[in-house]
Length: 219
Image (tube, rainbow, N blue to C red):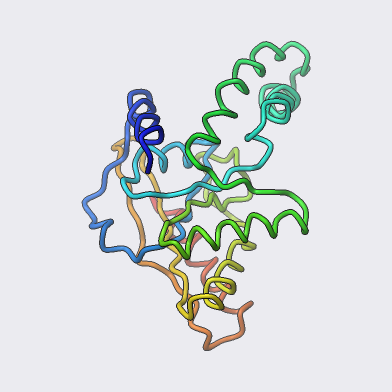
C-alpha cells in the first residue's frame, strides 16, 4: 500500500469508523478473495477502511471516469432509483463524480468491465494481482441496494478466478466470506473456502455459493 492509499484510508476512517475483529486475519492464506455484501456501497467502504492488509476492490468501470460516473449518479443513483427526474440532480451528481472517480482510481481498484469480451480484462488483471500475493475484495450480492434483508442470490462468475489461478500456480484459490456488523463495528470472516477438483466445477461452485450465502446472512 502506497502513501496515498494509506492517507486516504486514514482520512476515510475519520468519517467511516473501521470495523475490528478478534480473529487473526494474518493467519488467512495470502492471497485470498474476500466476498462481501455490497449493502448500497457500505460493504466496499467498510472493507477499504477496516482491512489492514493490502487489497484491491472490484469496482464497476463506470466509476473510474468522471463522465460515466456523472451519468450513473444523475440518471440512476440519485434519480430513477428513487422515482425522481434526473435533471434536478445534475449539480449533486457532478459533485459526487468529481470526488468518487479520482478516489476510485487512487485506491488502486480493479475495474469490472461489462460485456463478455471486456470482462476478460478484469479477470486477467485480477489473476495477476492474486499471483503477486495481493488479495481482492468482491461484492457478490445481486441486489446492491439491499442493506438488511437476507441474500437470496449472488453472482458466481468470479469463481472462474479459480481456474486461471490454479492453471498458473497449481494451487487452489482461497475464497473468504467476510461480513460487517455496523452497530458494534465488528468484522467477521469465515474459514476460507476452496475448490477441491474432486467434483465437477459447476457442482462445487453451487456448494460454495450456498456456503457464502449462509455465512453472509448470519447476524
